[in-house]
Image 1 (cartoon, rainbow, N blue to C red):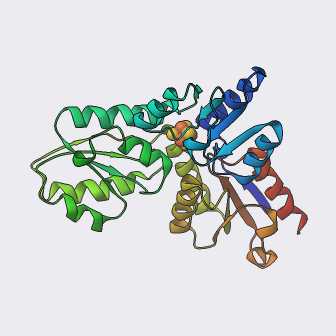
Image 2 (cartoon, helix red, strand yellow):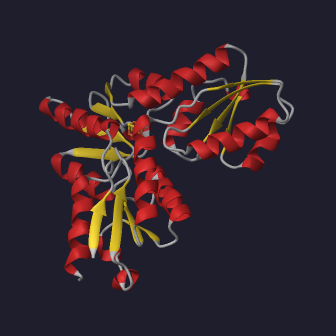
Length: 280
Ligand code: SF4
């Protein structure tokens, strides 16, 4: 059985940068270091950082004064930054430049008077951070096409999308908005890394008998990778680690493809590869 890893898989540059900035901030030993939320959607990495002294806090209210807080790659809204600054907490901003760009585009659309439709998962921190860039009256998050009904009366609409969503989703939503709005301004804010991973996963899924996507079940981009792989190859499985792999998946397989989301360490993908190879 041949096991192949997709050309682009595992940590993206935004995640690498966030982890590196968090680790560098430990050099100032006068301040304790916290992250606001888990730095990435990967429990193994979060535990490793915790052991080094970088603790994840779920609420900004819990961050002690005079400490350092790392804003993770998902970013936060301006109101959160202002509240943290008022508490005299040192901020290390590890917001991914692609997310910063989406935040900027949301502000631009808002300032130009468009009603903003942000496509993405309502509860995702990146989406909450982008939404917070615009007056709440002038922005909504659309997760599904049904959500667009709430904007059916808006004539000037600006659209953008969570960085890790798919182009198909953006096109589907834009098509529907065009039926009711008279002016639509669209920014494709899907990050290049996400596109590369999705394209390579699709290519590989078409070629192999079984596809395995490795990464946190709470990771949006890993879940999308699994979804789009499944559209090409029904024998697609999303696993967090080797323990979830079932030998019966590979009984009739001669080729297996592997991919992993932007928050998956490459070593996790290699570990899954070795585990599958060892089952032969
Ligand atoms: S997936 Fe893209 S937007 Fe998200 S952190 Fe990585 S590079 Fe940045």
